[in-house]
Amino acid sequence: MRRPVNIAPPKGKLGILTPGMGAVSTTFMAGVELVRRGEAVPVGSLTQMGTIRLGKRTENKVPAIKEFVPLAKLSDLVFGGWDVFPDDAYVAASKAGVLEAKHLDSAQKFLKNIKPMKAAFDQSYVKNLQGTHIKKGKTKFDLAEQIRQDIREFKKKSKADRLVMVWCGSTEVFLKPEDVHRDLQTFEKGMKTNHPSIAPSMLYAYAAISEGVPFANGAPNLTVDIPALEDFAKTKNVPIGGKDFKTGQTLMKTVLAPGFKARMLGMNGWFSTNILGNRDGEVLDDPASFKTKEESKLGVLEYILQPKLYPQLYGKIHHKVRINYYPPRGDNKEGWDNIDIFGWLGYPMQIKVDFLCRDSILAAPIVLDLALFFDLAQRAGMRGIQEWLSFYFKSPMCARELYPEHDLFIQLMKLKNTLRWIMGEDLITHLGAEYYD
Ligand SMILES: NC(=O)c1ccc[n+]([C@@H]2O[C@H](COP(=O)([O-])OP(=O)(O)OC[C@H]3O[C@@H](n4cnc5c(N)ncnc54)[C@H](O)[C@@H]3O)[C@@H](O)[C@H]2O)c1
Image 1 (cartoon, helix red, strand yellow):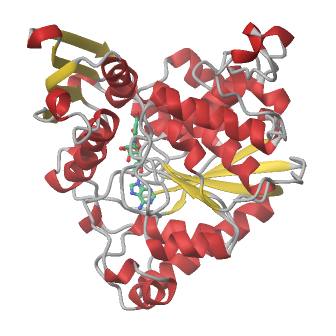
Image 2: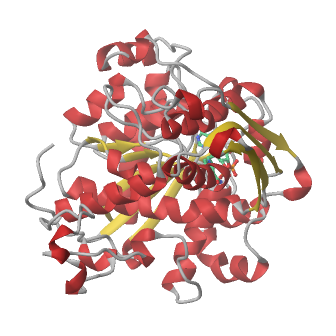
Image 3: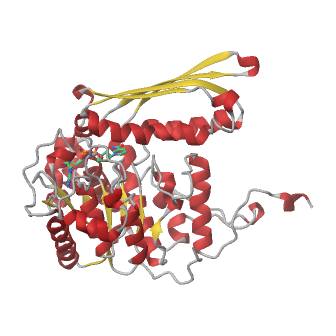
């Protein structure tokens, strides 16, 4: 990839489209509105709160990220989306039960104006959802064409200059890459013949790329992570990425595991279990959707700990992940981790983590950052997989010949160095020998 030389300025409005207007999406939209009215602080958002060091440590040059790179301003954001239920964003946010009454009341008028477009949906891909607000079409290709039409109409109506799409829809059943995902021609033929391995989320991704709209996938579904759509994105100069927002338990895993490995502490096992009671939890109660999530959560340790390189330390890890649907907790998930590690001479130790987290509160700033960075990537002429945004994903997409980078700190370094690189600044290696000449 060549270094971008010209970055188009973020002129006009940026439209953020979310297939899925549930807990995460509405918490994100309401949050942006409250922040721009000065009623809240965008905690958890790197684009809004983060800084970046430039040059030597002695130079004291640490601008805010949003002043260093030309990002769209919050005041220029407009929102739209699709859902299988007709509830506007206010009703959906009220049902999701994430935000308190004072925040809901304050954002009511704004949220009421965001009404979902009809979804491309098929219950065989999300067993525990019975949608009513659904597009009709003879083939999957027809449905994708309808989504393209929605995108064009939204752009016109909202007077948006540019768009990005972030999948905030439910987790679909587990699908593996198959022949039908091989190249664009086969994929398009598959849509026209209603191939069962083409899920609704793929139709949104296909429509977005066709319309030149960057696409980020916040769920663990295969979606855009197939050769046909990767190649299509490159041809159309569209940035893409995914999968699965890195929030609660996996965020903790990618913080803790690099620490154990840095100290060469061994590990026998990591048992993770959760209770959550939101709609996401209900969807994940179906084994086929859980399988998609489980695969996404399990990969993390394997890649961070590298058991093949360190067989004595990490060769025999028992890694288990459980998610239990438990309605009384709503969106306020509780995740327990029991970590069996060992030290000098093999003596065993245990670590317990009990994270009483708020799923959508952790996910909302990720949606914002992804939307702003994907828009930046497009204006900088970057296309295809945006691996530098792995920081935000549980199961990051990367070039086919690579393995994904999961360590949160390496991911952050990669993200910030990419920003320096885009802007023509020196990269920071952390060598620091020059201070001791
Ligand atoms: N909250 C988190 O911390 C977190 C972390 C990682 C990933 N995710 C993923 O993000 C997604 C959204 O999470 P959530 O908590 O908002 O779930 P949610 O159930 O509240 O919202 C998802 C919405 O998507 C809609 N939907 C399903 N299929 C659709 C389709 N084909 N087209 C349009 N809409 C569709 C559903 O009706 C629902 O309203 C889930 O896949 C979840 O696994 C969430």
